[in-house]
Structures are given as C-alpha cells and as structure tokens.
Length: 294
Image 1 (tube, rainbow, N blue to C red):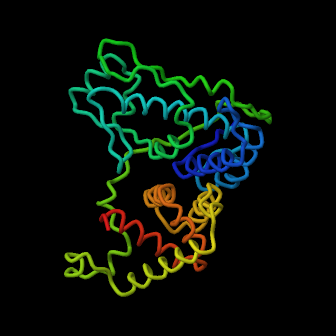
Image 2: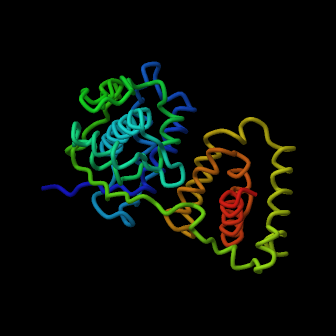
Image 3: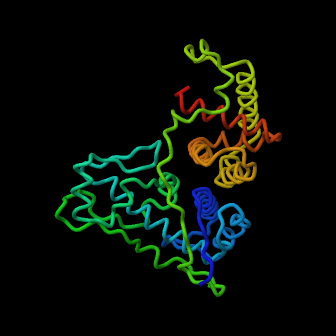
C-alpha cells in the first residue's frame, strides 16, 4: 500500500491560507471550484512539510483531497454549531453542549461522536473562505430527526488535478485534541512581568519597548502602504514566515494565525521585523495582549 500524506493542524493552516491567496488572485471560479493552478500553488506551499508531519509528499492531488475533507468537516461543525442546545468554544475550537444534549444527539446519530471531543481550530479561516458556497441544511436539532446534510455539493465541481498515479484516499490526519484555553497558556513574555505589575496590567520596560517598536512599524506601514498591504498575500506571507521560523508551539501558531486573520496590521508588522528572535517576541506580546484583553 502506498504511503499516505499526513496532515497536521499547521499543514491545514498553510493549505487554507494558500487557497485564500489563490481566491484573491481569481483562481476560484463562480461556482466555488478551483483552477488547477491553485492546487499547484498549494503543493508548492507545502513542499517538504512531510519532514515534520511524516507520511508521503503532499501533491496537488492530495491537497485537493484534503481540501474536500476539510470542507466536509467544516460543514458538519457548522451544522452542529447551529443545532438547538449546542454552542461553540472559540478558544478551544470545539462544539459544546451539556451531557444530556450530547447523549440524545449521539443516540440518534452516532456518526457525530468524534465531535464531542475533537477540535476544528481552523473554523473561522474556513468560514471566511467558503461560507455561502455549501449547503448546510436544517440546523434545528431534534433527536429523532435525521441528521443535517454533511456532504458538500460544491465539492463535486472542484477542478481535479492530474492524479500523478496517487490514490486520492491516501491521507491521514492525526487526531486533533482540543487545545488548552488561551488564558491557560503562559507565554514567554509573562516571565518579564513582576507580581505587582501583573496586578496593574503593566508590562516590563523590555516588553514596552517591543510594543513601541511595533506601533512605530505599524504607523510606518499606514503611511507607506495601501490596500495591497492588507491583502491575503500579506497575511499568507506572514503565516509562512511564522511557520518557517518554527519558534512557536502549535497552539501559539494557530492563535497567531487568528490574530493575522483579524488584524492585517499584525501581518505587516511580522513581515517588517527582520531579526527572527525579535519577530517571535513581538508575536508573543500580541498573543499575551489578546489573552489578557489588553
């Protein structure tokens, strides 16, 4: 049996970010399909990723297949989030409900069992990219009713790249346990804060200097940059740079991707800071501020 491509949460983030860039460049068709060039770009973006994830090299074909599966999972999670009695934990990226609601749901639809504990950390990024392109079906939950649709009709129209002799089913994705809450993840920056300064929400002189430098860089970007600086291309470049640096753990990487998605100035600042150590320190400052609500 041929080896399968193995997909980590980081690999999924790279694939989604690359397709976002391809959509901005007009490589998504009016019926939400993708031009073959989009899959070539995805393969290039994920080149050598198998050295970290293991498994086979990720090709255009396996990228297409992974995207199809991600859309199906996104659609399932979207439907679950809309069911009566169900909620969403933004920090953990998991569907939430009382034990009673889960028990009734799983009694009627045991195929949803994995989503009681599994996370889907890229939900917002996926939602930005594909929202409105797939059918979500009825969202109200009735334990005796059939489950909402979990297939994606748009998937059938995606442009299929050449198979390159590869079985499209050759894919493995490690189980993704729910990440720890943001507020429980202690960043390296917090070591710079004294007990008294934490109570007053003041940062150390070193951290304050980093914040001032970041502010100056963002102001410079506001003066020199135009709409292009806030483009998906800038966000993709920032995400790729963070992945290349390899200074953050997986949870921090995902949180950094969320910050970049929400505020393009973070992407501009990441790209403007040349020393890797200072760049990573700036990201941790931003993550710390986001986690404490500063």
